[in-house]
Length: 107
Image (cartoon, rainbow, N blue to C red; front, side, top):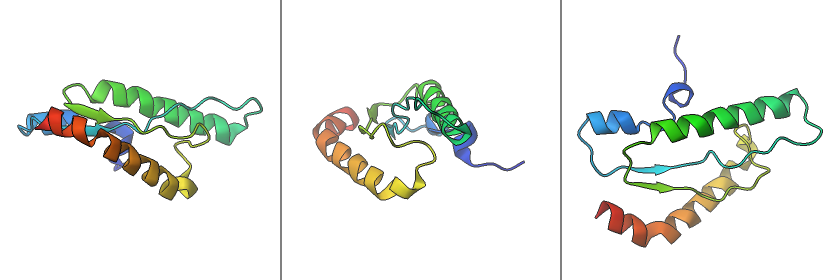
């Protein structure tokens, strides 16, 4: 079965380390996904996927040199494809704020 890499290798740090890379920057988009008080099956599935991605990210980023964690809105979940542009802008702003620390860590 072929599936998206995000299912089994959300952040391929281990692969990069095996390839000899030493300066690895990752972006953590797992965020904080609280379950809505009146959750339906879609909300529960979205929160479950988000929690899974968050847990996998923690396990799969061992060895990274620097991680950017943008402050995504609590209303954004793993299935919020319609808010991609907003999330990209938040990520860009987080990266710009982190540039001095990134340069120092990856120097």
